[in-house]
Image 1 (cartoon, rainbow, N blue to C red):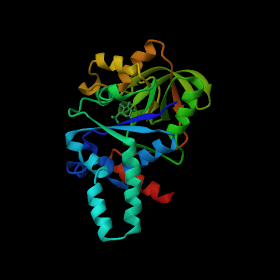
Image 2: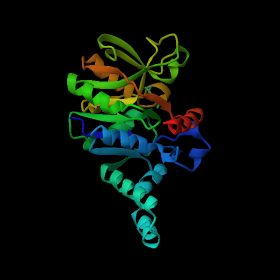
Image 3: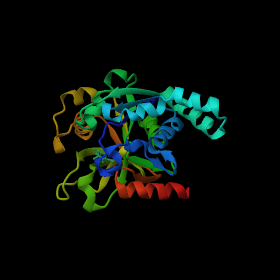
Length: 271
Ligand code: G1P
């Protein structure tokens, strides 16, 4: 059973400057609701019982968003507002679920994952990257179903434009399981067009094994000098650990870039 999820939130969000010079990108509203709440709702609906937020001193605003109880209590005492009261109840529900750990140096997603090591209880856990919203169908829930069937690690996958492969982790696929699921032969972080083995990209949903921590603790910096989770995953695949690429059926929205963020608002408003 997958009961714990982790969410790396210490990223600087430079693609969303100037907004992120004073604001955490994950709190930016998408159709009136912070992006991170969409991710939390996906977790809750998928049966997750604990979510570990990896934040930094600079992103403490995220913790404050969930820990503003005395402020809400004061307001609600003065003013009986059913909307505010409903929102506060929702925040309390999220708060019960969340634990915080810190990554104060932006050394990469792999380093962020390593910070959660002592809190992971089961053999597998879920990771969600907050820039990647998947709407209309719960991707985490579908991936957990695949994990329960095959007892292996699972990562979300999507076909991307060949010209954009150097923006993503890219798969080389192995045996087909069914129309939407394939075993992974290789995964390479941000390859050049020339070296990319396909145009199937890693999207930010991962069911990872606890074993990843021992790989991560030895992982050397890769592309851009960062510790990439992709490199440790590749190392586990080389040790014959099974990873499945799952073609999800929801709609992908990239909230980490300005154009993607604007598009997300428009798409979500349509639902
Ligand atoms: C990260 C991963 C990459 C993946 C992408 C999905 O990259 O390292 O493998 O394809 O998320 O959004 P980043 O967006 O942090 O550059």
